Amino acid sequence: MQMTEQRRWRFKAPEMEGSVARWYARVRGSDSQLALYRRQARELTEGLAEGARVLEVAPGPGYLAIEMARIDKFRVTGLDISRTFVRIASDNARQAGVTVDFQQGDVARMPFESGTFDLVVCQAAFKNFTLPHSALAEMHRVLRPGGTAVIQDMSHDATHEDIAREVGGMGLGRFSSFTTRATLEMLKRRAYSPGRFASLAATSPFRAARITTDGIGLEVRLDKKKDQ
Figure (spheres, rainbow, N blue to C red):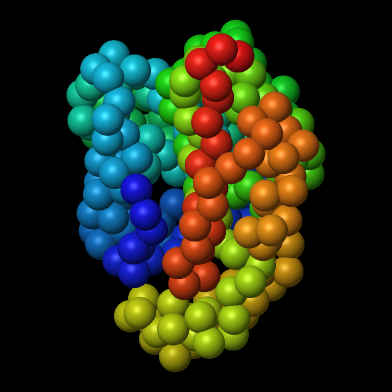
């Protein structure tokens, strides 16, 4: 699956708890955003066998995980460091009438047995991880042989023009456009470039990555070899 211009960018700041987490959940829960999550859920799970186990790392309010669960073919789990997000996501899943196992925990020390999941997904959060090497090692560990991890985040190589074009397509008012653009410019500073992520992947148990960019976005696919 390649990134498309129809994907509007999402951003998460680290340590989202309390009112900040609840604000983020409201912002990301619009009808247009939920429609986007539904499309992404289909794209990300395309080709997975029925009964496959899927883990979303840092799911926030849980919208993507819930949409993957709505497909009604997979067992979906979410792991977030934020206790507020775990409560919000669990409530959202109950209201949606789907089963998702949202748990509180650290991506650098995941509370799952090795070889548990067929797919690991992480959106708009990897740049915030304080232990990225440990995060990749843990993603590799919890994947079954032949499984894939997909990381979608902002690219450090995004230009000012890329950011302006992205924000211009969000349909925001003048003030919201200004604050969103400023936030993305700030987040870009700690985002990964394709080259930096390739180097990180090379020193991880995955050893290699397939990296694509589109606009301000970066998508990384990491495969666990079948003999690992």
